[in-house]
Length: 145
Image 1 (tube, rainbow, N blue to C red):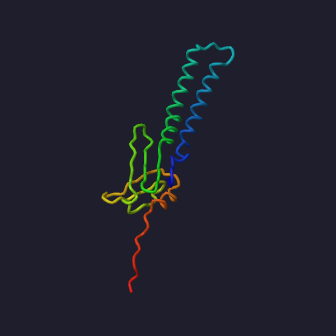
Image 2: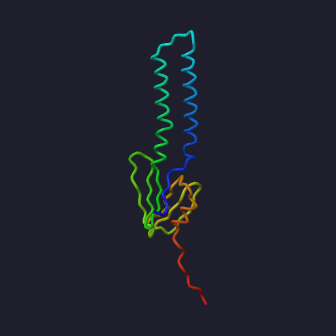
Image 3: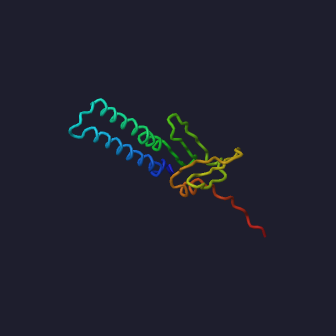
């Protein structure tokens, strides 16, 4: 195994901000209901807590699980890629079939023999290092005399 990468932590920045916002709004609502001198129905307070739980799971926990499932592995013989989706299939590309590798923004573009277009894998961490691991050595050209 030459490299084994998961999605970078930056993919969880906005879900984390959403979690803070959801927690803040729900905490304000529960605090408003719990103030002294006012008698709110406990079912309504529990409904706000259930809403907070559901929104937190939907907007933070599920993206976290998807980000951790996203894998990009480079071995001595192949490149193995798995998307972060639940029933995602694993793609395997033999290194001998690769004729070109380039970084494309935060991802990697891999050109393979037999395909008209290169395959693009977005959001690959440490893309420069991965490109160096995958890049086939240029063929040795004898000098012309």
